[in-house]
Length: 446
Image (cartoon, rainbow, N blue to C red; front, top):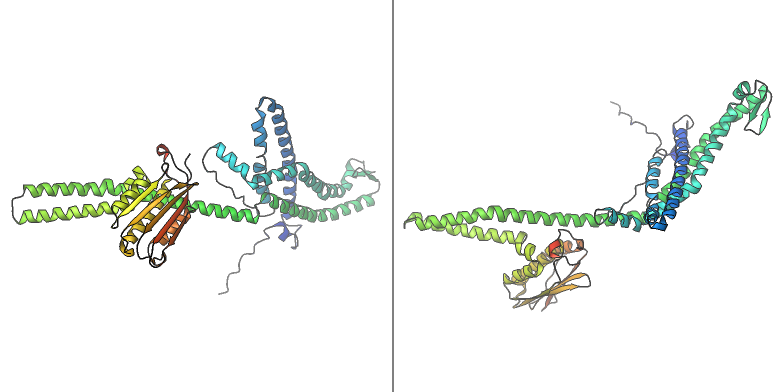
């Protein structure tokens, strides 16, 4: 069987269509005409809107009502640029606008975010250029490339109708009095109309390129927007991960743990009521196993997300981890208030992993956890007097925690020369939160 031929696709832009055969018989001249004609109409409307808004704002500024209107006039480029992107689809591929997400919902965060964007001011410049210069050029191109040749092409018709068969005015400049001259002017008009089709395509293509430069994002802005969005997506993943850990902790605490507590109590009561013998021995054994399972479940819940961290904050959780450490630990941690929950969780698990490594590998006799909040950053130091030689890349468990800290724009560093001491440092940018307004996110709390 012969392979099925692939369907042929037409040109995707006016620049690709211009050198192709059959351009004049394709939809592209009409699309170029539609682009330029709608540009003339939209530009005139933009000019009227800007003049009206500025005039109203200037008049009302006396009573301070016009000041917000003047500020909003600076945002006129946003809807104009959006309209331009839709019109670009007539002859070209419309560029996307990388929009930065406001830090919170509401009109004020949206307004401040838009006013700080370079794209907003670039689009305002495009709107002013569009209203003052570009739309008259669009109208002139349409007039000279289409209207004038079309008027020449209908000269015989004008001579037969308006001139009574004796004369016709050509472009209101000269008079044609004979039919051969009228026919010659008509042929000239058809030739100019064909050339006008190409002129419309060239003008529309150049106009679209200028619009793309003005309302499309430069490469560096696009890359910056991608980096910002990637960072935000990583933070959202951390928040979702922490929320899921808290949900699992609550489900285990309120579900499986309560059932095990009830089972342990029931076995204890049955053990007391049972007479001495094999049954009592089996009940005692089952009661002991249930107690061990309950203890292991509590340790598991504590490792998923300790309740003391959610209820009392990082200092209490670190103190609790120090009490459970195999090595004596001195804790000196002073914070002005609660921190964002993702920051508290990351710092807590770094401390827990560090204390676990000290107990298993360092041979230390004592450790210390110190830190506080300084210059907009949470700073933690975990030190021990062990043998040193620790390597974060050698399977200590700190690599994943370092990645987790880096998501929060933090930094984790390890200093462990042979012979000790070992010092683990963590710095995470954050701002304290009001305990009554402790939200589950990484942004600074208001």
